Length: 488
Image 1 (cartoon, rainbow, N blue to C red):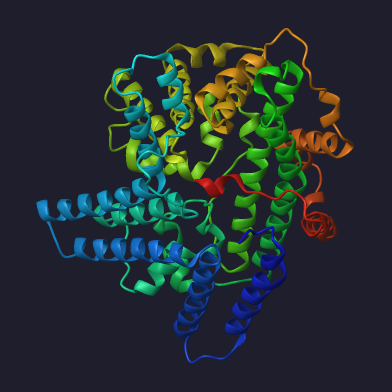
Image 2: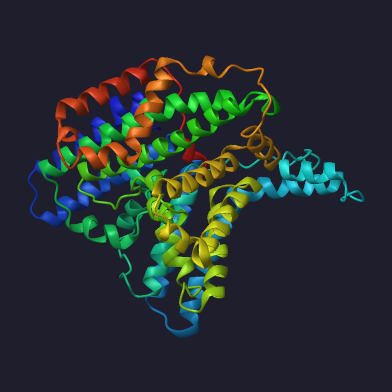
């Protein structure tokens, strides 16, 4: 169920808000009892929300909930090696679940390709077929359907178990409250990845206010506008361009497709994060920001401080720092960065394109740490820093968007193709697309940082309703309405 779907906007969301409000207003003998009923209500609604995408999916999520709840419970009564063993087993089981549903199809395709070329693995065609991950179907193994949001809720569950092991949070004794932490619908399918310490108090002591509710409405309206009015419009253009014969695109159309996708993925994901933060605020939960205008960054290091902040924080806290972080010398720091961003790429999907995407950032971050960062700091023309950063970010998105490394290679070549294209770039530049590109550029941070210092225009309830109404009209019209991060 998409936040930008009619069933969510007209049925599910009003039901949740009204039900939560009634439980807030109805008299109870004690505040704790009220919270218990509200938690149970939100848990049932969240499980229904997730089950809307398929009943079988909910069994997987419930399995993760049980695994990590009891894993943390066992940790609280153990010490020494037995405690560490419980942690390792629990984390490995989580990773096994994630691997099976996310990477099993990739493994099967690779095995089928190797079988088809056995004895001729040095052929150039073999490498091309292997990297495409199409497989041959020889093993006749049915493809595994990826459960929505599995990468997000497994990472949340693992972070909780690790925090209990570290004694930074107490183990949750109520399995229903823990289930709500994992399944709470605003952040269930696309993040932000919420650590248990950020939500523990709100599970038992949250208070809702009119100010928080109105703030939540504002974030939801603008998030939906970002998703529907900008991301969907430019995403449609990107999809049309990527569907063409890649070798015949020409430079102009290739750049338009890359720029359109660059805006699509940002406004799609940050818009969804805004809606999630807004929904949480309406219900009394407060989560950290997930994006901080990443397209205004002047280095790759700064970009990753601003992009998908909850994921970056997760890898920093649970992989980078345990590996030693930057405390064991330059060589070890560079090694740790390579490991973290290789894993970041793998986390995003079962394709070699994501691995190369992650390694691209690893190489750039290592270069900035060794020498490039100092050059960027000394450079007086900061617009060159921005151009360098955005070029590699956009080039990275080509790998991210492409179905295979072969497609990505051809697409990048087209960016600098001197020949003429058989396709006209003007046929893709409608007034709606031009407006989306214009507001996409302004809304990437350049406009907000200027306007917010001089005016409160974004606090206007009338403007929020206009954005919401325009978004809903687009949804009602049945326009293009995907969501990129469902696949992760």
